[in-house]
Amino acid sequence: MGASELYNGKRKQIGQTLRQMGWLDTGLYALDRLLNKVSKGGTRLYKYYLVAQPVAKASLLPPGRGAQIQVRPIGAQDAGAKQFPRPAAAIEARYAQGARCLAAFRDDRFIGYLWLSLDGYQEDEVRARFTPAPGAAWDFDVYVAPDCRLGFAFLRLWDEANRLLADNDIRWSCSRISAFNAGSRDVHARLGTVSLGSAVFLRAGRWQAMLATLPPYFHLSPHPAAFPEFRLDAGKSGEPVSPRGA
Image 1: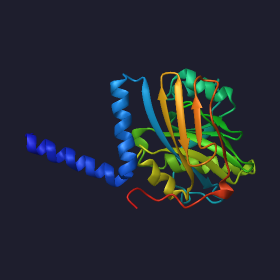
Image 2 (image 1 turned 30 degrees about the vertical axis):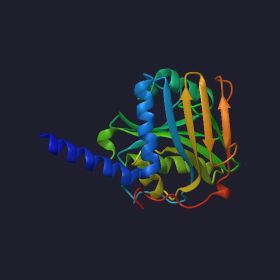
Image 3 (image 1 turned 90 degrees about the vertical axis):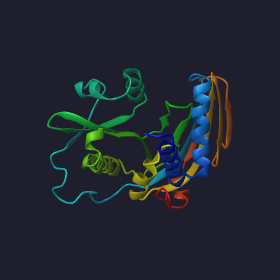
């Protein structure tokens, strides 16, 4: 491949990223990559969109679709948890704070999971706590195996999650979307998600700075015990989340 083809390919890739993420988020993404490289992983920049989606009353799948996929709760001692694609310490910390996990299997093979917390969640990527208002829950780390992402696993997980939430009188599920994940916004838009705000975190060594469009708006954290808490009220939600490029 010649230099001209490489240049044109790179320009096309940049143009696609701009269309998907917009100028601001693309710039922040580039800045995160630069900071990460220069600091050798010691400094990172994160941007999240905080959103809420209504708990669906009807199945997301037509009758009979995805029937071969079994979705069941997985406890901390369940052997299935050993197949999760996250560090064991992170999984243990989730269970320790009361999070629940629904896992999907096909022919006894683990193909995905979805995590829920009915009492708020202490984030493990940045220092922050997300606390939904009464009648809402928090969902996070929805994962589907790469070779199953064009199938029904994602919607099967959400069908079971909606049943669990409805049984607990939960009407909304709140979550965060990484602004640097171009496909996640599309997925959430299709679920009827509405925007609650956004937050940017800068982590440098033991320090963390946070700037958000919703309370507490700004927070400076010098150590792990100091973190902002977001109290999320889906009843005060804003515009529906639009698909990328919309």
